[in-house]
Length: 130
Image (cartoon, rainbow, N blue to C red; front, side, top):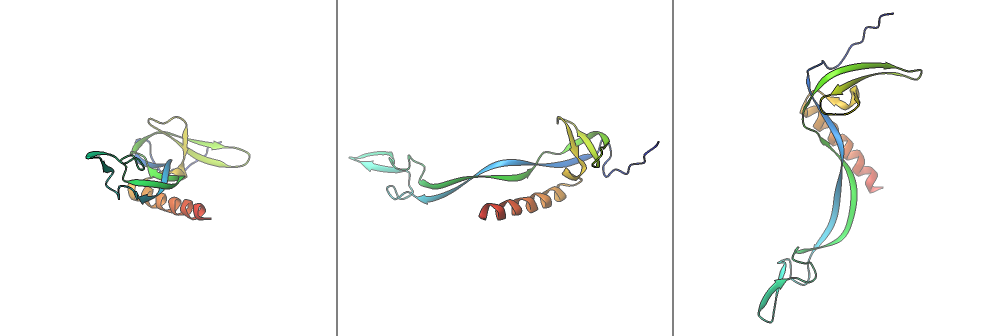
């Protein structure tokens, strides 16, 4: 039995992938001891502020959030069509990566990858607010 599979990408084609990355979101305020200078004068000596430790700001709150970013461009080295009882899917092998990547996680241009990152990050921000 012969199966004819249409692929979105070709072997050797340069493509873009996106990945999840942890981002720390901090709520800060200006230090009320040094007024954002990072240092104070004490008995004629300049020293690092004891409250902010020279950072000029005080961290009030810190939250971890997952964001999506574009990986460096890479090339497709092979493709594999897998058929299971539940579904069939086309996967690609990408140089420098272990494992296979599904077709829907690969983008032909950086602009397409940026658009998808923006969509996913907006969804993550909306979920984070709730």
